Image 1 (cartoon, rainbow, N blue to C red):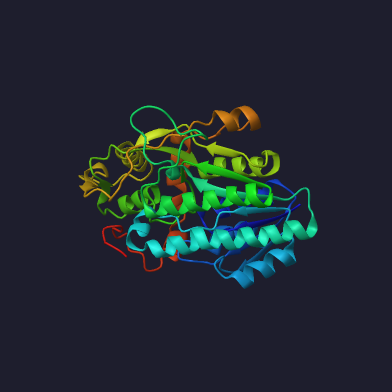
Image 2: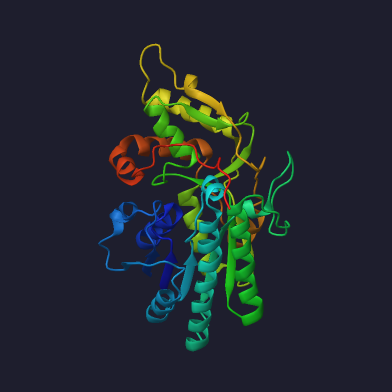
Amino acid sequence: MKILVTGGAGFIGSALIRFLINETDHDVLNLDKLTYAGNLESLAPIADNPRYSFIQADICDTASINEIVASFGPDRIMHLAAESHVDRSVDAPGEFIQTNIIGTFNLLNAARTLYERDENDNFLFHHVSTDEVYGSLGEEDFFTEETPYSPNSPYSASKASSDHLVRAWGETYGLPIVVTNCSNNYGHYQFPEKLIPLIIMSAFEQKSLPIYGDGSNVRDWLHVDDHARALYLVATSGVPGETYNIGGNNEKTNLDVVSTICDVLTELRPPGQNLSYHNLITHVADRPGHDFRYAIDTRKINRELGWLPQETFESGLRKTVEWYLENGDWCEAVSGGYEQERLGLKSAN
């Protein structure tokens, strides 16, 4: 089977491609624009595999996308290319509208043309999305596949729009589609603007550890390798037209996450006499429109496809901290001009 992965140099995309190359026999084409968050270093372990190939392209470039999809002729398109950092969407929402909505529109049209040309009964367009499209939960209940959409940030609104486009192309044009909505991912090779790698790197450098507001916001944490396994299972066994929510069953407050990282670091790399990672924790002004809680009901994918996460938060986080401590060169190489500064405070048009 031939699989086209968009955004394959990103955090989740690279984990998916490493899984596809290491655990399956499929041919994989990685299509990525290589923005600041897309790094081919994340694919170095499989880069020389004859079943893997890479092409640099922007999903907003209609002509290029049409040509690439038509010439490769994939059986599966696994669409992960997206602008994904909520704070950046507050500062620059236009980039999110272009990539997440217009880019998805272009890819859907190219997929439709291919599907109608080849009449491939095995074809499937798999759109990878987020639980943030559902909005914010109170202290109880969980997001299910039937939860109404209620996005609260430019990022989540752009992803909700792309979800709707995918379903519309399924209903209107008969394109075989499937949608997955996942909870917060963490693990190795994640760009350090996200909470867990940011805290790990900042703590080790004895920088302040910023927590939005009082730190009580709750997220469900999913290890990226568990997510990659789930994505492959959906792409190969999921029912066309269906949505599957993917979560790690690991609800933690942001303060709990940061405190646990400090505990693991203290064990693995003691900070020195009279120093404490916990003392670096600093509460900062909350993010605009910060959703209180996300939590995923995973019973559908558990019941219908037999998927369960293998990592607990404790086991996955320890592996993640160890990886960042052992891969400082990668962190330095991909960070570029990013100085771990606070984003998402500006007003943007």
